[in-house]
Length: 212
Image (tube, rainbow, N blue to C red; front, side):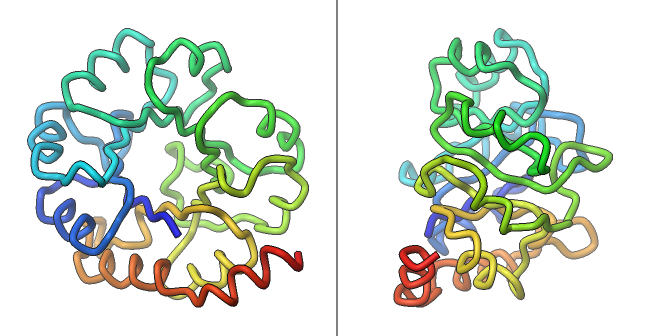
């Protein structure tokens, strides 16, 4: 199970995530209480092992600006978290994660988007993502996309991540607010969340995957 810890703002949080087998580290370059400036992100990126992929989260940003930040920080993926048209993804020479708020009326749009991973999130709040709210995971069954390309987000926590994996059967999970205490990344929660996601019993996961 792949794990993405998003909204990283400190070296300490990044190192704990990496040391505990996180697969992706997310930097938010958009309006958010988890926003980070490119210089700080670049400094953190320098200490992240190569096997941990660095993701830049953008919302309706220009291609030029995304390219500039991606090159400066050394990103491996660009996450489009706004209303970006498919043409935007196709013009970016990076692997793409496209975030979608999962609602009944936008399911057909999701499955036709060109990207490496679909990040399926809860309906929008004040900012894109980070609402701490779950969505109806059963809606994923109505989307005709490969489960190997689905990263589940939205309201995940140490308490519900194993249930979410069993029901939604994604290839990965994404968390931000669920590993925070008083609005700051909680190192203990990061460790616990990754362990919970990684240690789900394989027989439980595959049984649900092939008998859904």
